[in-house]
Length: 81
View 1: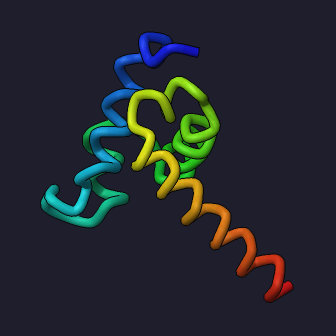
View 2: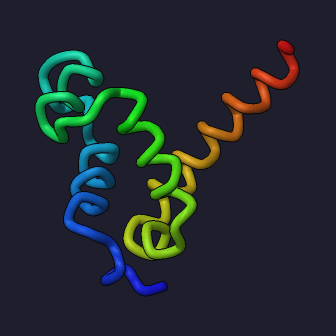
């Protein structure tokens, strides 16, 4: 799937994830204001996005880093439960 298959929103989210710390305020607040999404909705969308091969083609280092973080969180949850 080529990177052209990403929506404008997909590209905006990837750009935001790349440098969200540069934005003023708490991440959840910025997500609500910038994307008009709840934090839960945003993370659900982000998790689907980082599984999209087009997202990896567009921003390979970022997508792989986000996948590693997600996998680490899931692993910690499994071992704690």
